[in-house]
Amino acid sequence: MAVTPLWLSLTDLGRIYGISAIHCGRSLEQQGWRDRRGRPTPTALEAGAAMNAGPHGQGRSVLWNRTVCGTHLEAQGYEPMSRSLLVDQWTRLLEALDLGSPSINATADQMAEDMPRELVEEVNDQLAARGCTYRVSGRARQERRSASAC
Image (tube, rainbow, N blue to C red; front, side, top):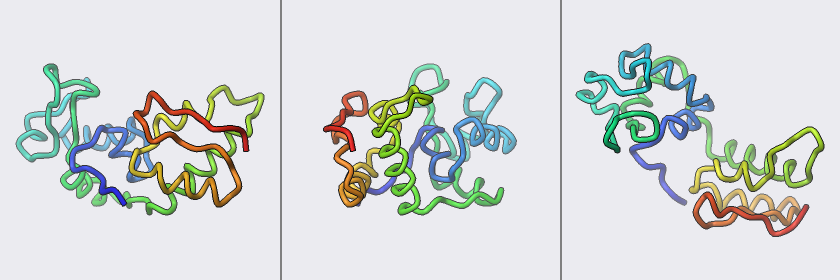
C-alpha cells in the first residue's frame, strides 16, 4: 500500500479531506498562507506549509505540506476521508461512467486521470470484485485506458 507523499498539490491536499482545491485554497488563504493569486505567502514558506516547486510560485508549481496544512485544516473541523471510502467512491464513479450515460460527457478514462495513483490497485481490485471489466491503467495519468465495458 502506497503512502501519501508529504508535499502535495492543492487538489491532492483537498482530496484527502473531501474538499475541492478551491475550498482548500480559501482555507489556506484565511490562514494567511496563500495570497489571492494562489501563491504561498512568506509566512507559509517560513512555516514550512508550502514550497515553490517551479520558477514563478504559482498554480501547479506550488506544493503544500500535508502535515502542516493538515493540522490547520483539522483545526478548522475537516477530517481526512478514510482510504476505504475513497476507494469505494472512485470504484462506483468509474463503474458508472464506464456504463455510460447520454447526459455525462466525461469518460471513465478521463476521470481516472484525476485519481490518486496510490489508489489504482485497490480500485481495480474492487472493480473486478464487482464484476466490472474496466481497469485503470497503472501507467502515467495521461495514458489511462479501459479494457472493455462492464
